[in-house]
Amino acid sequence: MAIVSVRIPQMGEGLQEARLVAFLKQPGEQVAMDEPIYQMETDKAVLDVESPVSGVLLEWTAQPDDILPIGAEVARIETASAADQEQRPAVSPTQTSSPLPTEPAAAAPSAFAIGGPLRNADASPRVAAYARSKGLTDDLIRSIPRRGERLTQEDVDAFLSRSADAAYDEAPLPQRQRVLASRLVRARQLAVPSQLTVVAPWAPVERLKARMAAAGGDFQPSAFTVFAYAAARALPNHPALRSQLIGDATVRTYRSATLGIAVARENDELVLAAVPEADRLEWRPFAEAVRRAILEAREGRDQASEAVTLSLTNLQAQGVRDGLPVVVPPAVGTLLLGEPHWAWQDAEGSPVLARVVCLTLAFDHRLMNGMGAAAFVNEVRANLAAINRLIPIP
Image (cartoon, rainbow, N blue to C red; front, side):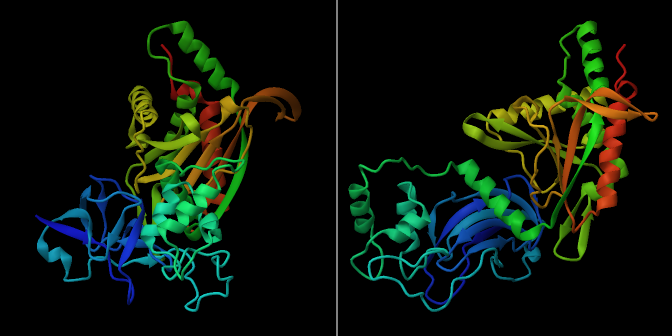
């Protein structure tokens, strides 16, 4: 075994430091060579930085928002052998946002040009990070008058003192939300999103819950857990929802599915719970695994990983019937469960009033087409209709 040090790369002449933006992998996770593992910001762009080797990420030796010199260590990866390094550079970054023009845009002497990332020629990453730590957005930082060619910390402090009586408050975006925002930005750059909605019966789930309550005992999983089980039971027949796209031409399909569950915390914070091998678990082990994962997520443990290819989100308690879920690669789909409501449904040629829910699947069109997406959601609908057979109550 060998331990490889991952370091901040040299991305251009004159670049001396960079800011860590977000981690894309967690300690203990497997990483593949050339797989993006973190993001960094230079004066020209935000970059995805790829792993130089395959192995297990042991630890991050720096933190998001750290301003680090070129060559500084940010992580350690354990590989099978030192030969795995292939004598290649420490990192191979991939640009994930539009680069700035090489020539500075025209601007007033006392302010930055509008739009685009902050430039090293205008403010060093260290000064920009200081301004952001004071709750200033990039647009506000651009508006700060400066005495010289580059913004200084004194310019920032002077601006803050003049803004003390402003009619609003500003604060830094919480770290977990910043990581989520980074993932969502990458999703817009990578995925080709599409979506569809199917109306599914909900009365069978409500009857099942009533039978559970009548049977008594401490084991009383939620209606959402029942829905999650119906979705998990459909996954073996739909390999596209156990897959991810590696590069532009390779599809990796997992032999078992790791199911993601979006969990809301206080202050509208969102983290992901994960249930490994969800498609192989019987009902009770599945429900217990869901409960454990959600409890850990509510305590602040984000379980997002590359193995999560399908996520579930539930807005029933908020009275939302339908919505626009977001797909975050490497996941291929997000399935939204809407609020139960009464609606007219066809039953052997005659309309009947029934309890139903909307199931909305957002999917990455690069890996899945409309027919395959509809087939999956319709199988989930069939599982909900026959839930008393999937989950027998003694």
